[in-house]
Length: 445
Image (cartoon, rainbow, N blue to C red; front, side, top):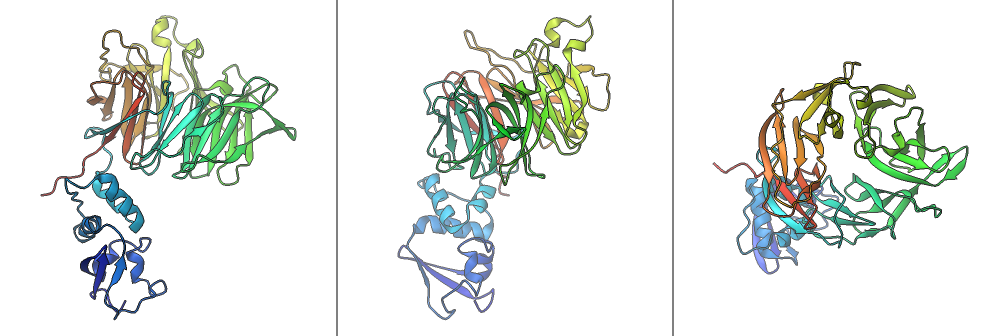
């Protein structure tokens, strides 16, 4: 195009629109409209009258206004999914997402949608995708939803029990599964998020022999492009396996040396600052909980805590840790027990004591005859989140003070939740439904 101030005319589905090259530049060169500014891509000459696009003109008007003003105004009679599909066609989905909700803030979240589950059984895990979608594990099935919350073809593991799921990127999902006795068909694989097709199966090798194994908890190091999972085998492959995200090849394996059941870990979490992997084996899987930092460079556990070593004066119930998450900003590990107490373990101290916080008491509300679920913990952007029964508590500040609670009126207890793509997904146990929580965009002044 001759210049950024020249006018450009579109005929979209029979309706004429006129705009400027400056407005089209706001779309970005990775978009269809922004690419019109690239002379090497543009096969039309500037003097030609108009571009014809055989698409929905009403949606085009909304998207063009978004490029002009940076604000998204969806008419009440326009289905959101229709606009999202059109935005995907023009390469403007990121622009729509950015205008649709604000930056993630746990204290400003509102319930945006509830999605009925597709599986007959209770869900076991939910994981947020990097672009605002999610996947839900039910028994041997994983159901995948895109940012528009439309279901993709499900992933079936043919009656193998799914243990954990996670996203490598928006298009690739890693699933860990339990080995069926004597069949050798467990382990871990990467699947297409859009088609459910198996792309690669990860192997564990020991002395150049491929071993069958059950894969458990997952974690990722995006900077190093590595995948970690806890592994249990029938021979010598108990411990933590490491694979390259790009090649799928096994690059390391830490064989269990202590009586801490690393291969049966409930939670793995990679710590970028320490270049270590937090490994947690928790109650009720074991009577005594173990949390450790595994350093593959040192080939050992460089820090550990166990309630087996806790003070004799502490009550047995208090010592039963149900979940844990590392808080890198404060160099600590947050834990929760069945008394709804949050505790903090200082990673800078090898004494290993838990400091239980009265200010961080959970808002526990349990309806009569409601089945309880074990609490889960997560951190995001300096905020701490903990599920308990049918709500999720949000904690902020240096003393982790309770600042808000996310709760809905039905669906039963929350069995799992996940944060990603500027959304929080909460999976309920009884109604096989998950909620989508979003931060509303800033008000227009």
